[in-house]
Length: 175
Image 1: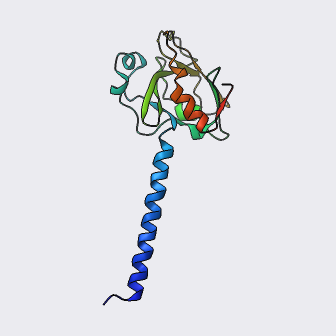
Image 2: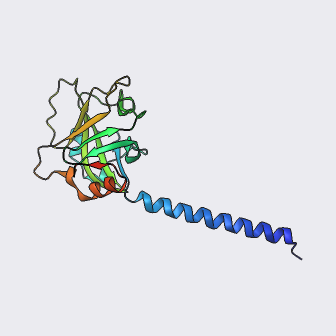
Image 3: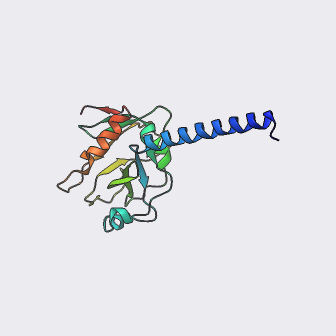
């Protein structure tokens, strides 16, 4: 015979399981439109440009997410970082003079290839993709970055999926 304490335990465990499943489903739905930037693994910017976007190997963890962005000026494609978040520190020592490729992702969809570029580089960035330039020093107090336009005719920065993701997170100004 089943005791009343076993029944109570069974009911409590089922309620906890339902709550856990319900919370996880909500997180997956909200993650669909997240904006993030991932570094490309083991490729130069030039090498990354020669591959299909879907074939680029990405780091497991994004270098930047919408949760770390304070504002995104849609007209200028400039973003500011939240206080205490240092993109400079995250990228210190990771941006060679030839640039470091990244991929902008919304949810799980890759939107475009870009490159982090060092302002100290003596190499002229002859790349046909958007780029973000800085000194990439941990102690820097830089908190605003501009995603500069590449030379190609279609501007991938204007993708509506990016706009919707950033609007959904309340980050967009000047659109």
